[in-house]
Amino acid sequence: MIRLDAPIAAVTVYPGQARVTRRGRVTLPGEDTRVLVTGLPALLHPDSVRVAGSGEAAVLGVDVVPERHARPSTAPELRERAEALDAALAEMADTDTAYGTRVDLLTGVARRSSGALATALARGDADPARVAAAGAGLAEELSRVLAERRDLALARERVAEERAEVQRLLADVSSEPDRVAVAVDLSGSGEVDLEVSYVVDGAGWESTYDVRLTGERLTVTWFALVRQHSGEDWPECELALSTARPAAGVAVPELDPWYLDVLSPVVPMALSAPAPGMYAGAAVSKRSAVAEVALDTAAVEHGTTATTYRPQRPVAVPADGSSHRATVAVLEVDARVDHVTAPVQGPEVYLRATAVNTSEHTLRPGRAGLFHDAEYVGVTALEPWAPGEELELALGVDDRVRVERELVRRSAGKAVLGGTRRLEAAYRTTVANHGPRAARVAVVDQVPVSRHESVVVRDVTLRPEPAERDDLGRLTWRLDLAPGQRAELELAVRVDVAKGTNLSGWRD
Image (cartoon, rainbow, N blue to C red; front, side):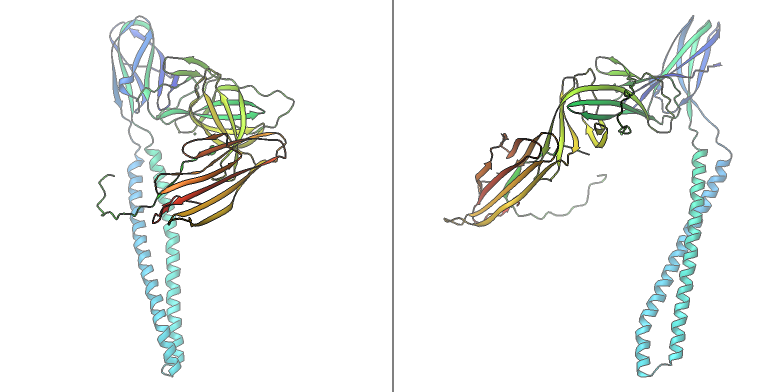
């Protein structure tokens, strides 16, 4: 049997797994030989192991075999110490409970006796000196018990710290995982270059972005965060990021329909037993006359159902779960910039950019750091973005455009005929542009929609008429405001409710 030194030469990282490739050279003696590649992680998929190579040899078989590691001799001692500390902590907890009971008892005795002694003193039936001595005795005993309880708490804290240290040492002793080896049966002679690859769990990559708006030009820098805890460190090697799957803060507000309905009584239900078993923005840098540093982007290979990106520089990824960043691509696209606000939900006015992906890249979902020129403004979630697809990006709140919605009229009464109740409400929305440039603002509001024949929505007044209105009562005004300009929008509505109808959903 020959042990082959085959270090990691390449890694392809998938969203939830990774394929690791090891390469090494072995000299065969001219007869059937078993070559052993050792030190492989236990998380590898045995059925994913593949062997290839070059040379005068033939592969007769491939086996995945366990490779056990002896545990350090200190492990039993540490476990015994941990058990002893656990017992000490349990005993201290019982003692603390006993102290608590004594404190409650002494406090209760003092509370009950104080009234009786005061009465006795008032009647002259008790000796003041004896009463004072009894009170001092109770206070002294309570003080002693409280002091002992404080000392016990400090001792418990020291024992707990020692227990935590023993646990850490145990974790270090047990951190060397069981590993596996790949045994390759070969026939042939001379030097043979072998390549062994396998898929491991505990690895993956996710997308993060920098989204920078300059004027009406949007720059999207795509980063990959690679992390893994597969049980083996990856050195600097050929790293590829694949979208294949070997195995199976700020958002633009959207309004739900404003429904009016008849309030139905709640029917009590019998109680029954429950059924059983019920990834950043880069640092902000100031602009200067010096040209910006260029980013090395990854080479891209488009397949039928997946895309593979190969970063320009090697990246070492240790098996500690920490993130390591590589630049994937940089997109430069034209954007249509406007503002959007839903004052019925809040006074915030959001800056929004609408752009078409004119690149060859399909961007994966991920967190995006938002920048306006050189200023960092927040974080948003970037949705999947395919080539040729239009996407809206929320770019944070713009405080230079202000909106205010106020209730200017409200009334409730009965109609002239019958017992129909009449509800009326009117709102005024003011939008002002305090910025240095003209602003396009989409104002989103709504009128109620009835879902019952006993509730009728009448006399909806809208000034000016909105640019868009749908059957669910959603309204959209589109305003072009020069610097310093303001606009007012009016919305009024009347609702008739049949006699005896309990209305739900109405709001002022």
